[in-house]
Length: 139
Image 1 (cartoon, rainbow, N blue to C red):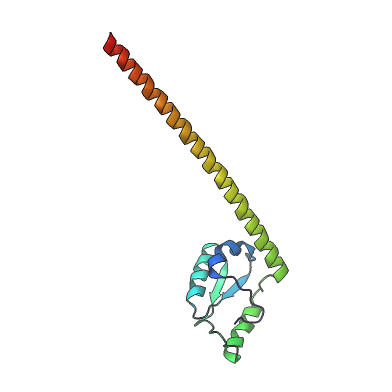
Image 2 (cartoon, rainbow, N blue to C red; image 1 turned 30 degrees about the vertical axis):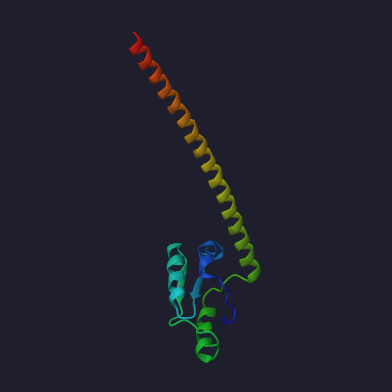
C-alpha cells in the first residue's frame, strides 16, 4: 500500500529516477520494513537530495491512523513533483541514459578498432623483426 500522494520509485530503478526529483525538495522514503528505504536514502543522500526515512516502514494493508500521521509531516515539506512533471523528468532521464549508452558503445567501438589496429601494427613489427633476423643470419 502507499501513502496518499506518494510516488512509487522501485528501489531497482531509483538511481535512474533520482534526477527527476526536485533538488531543493525534502523527501520521505518508506518501504514495508524500512530496509530498502534506508538503502534508497543512502543513494539519494549521495546525490545531494534531502531525505528522511519513515521509521519502521509501512506494512502492506496498514492504512490506519499510525500510517496517516507521517503523511502530514511529509506534506509539510516541499512536496514531490506532480505525476506529469515526474514522468516527464523520468522520460528525460531515460533518454539521457540511452544517449549515454550509445556514446559508450561508440567509444567501445573506437577502442576496439584501435586495439585491432595496434595488433596489426604489432604483427607488422614482428614480421619486420623476423625478416631482419633472417637477413642477418644469411649474411
